[in-house]
Image (cartoon, rainbow, N blue to C red):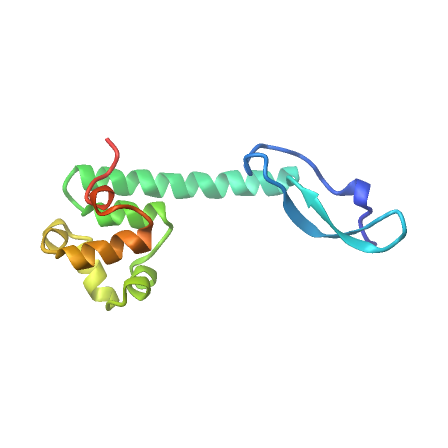
Length: 135
């Protein structure tokens, strides 16, 4: 049975920062299907919150590795953008093995300005931001 327009869940957990998203289609007063904006419903919000917690934990773990000198800042920015080496490699037109090499502090320190700029553009940061992580 189709959901009616007034039955579309609006359980705002502020995960979408006040932005609506479209929840499939619901029946309007005339019995026709239409898109209905919604801020979500509780089970979806719980799943979203848990997913973001995992992402944030990975970002923090990468940041700590950079601060300990185990990884380059590239690892942090990749985690922040939810990117793996293969995906970033495609964005900067490099083999994934080279990107993985640049995740090591020694490999990252060898990067020239042109490649730093390609990484920065792909990760939507400046070159200066790419070279560091938040303290």
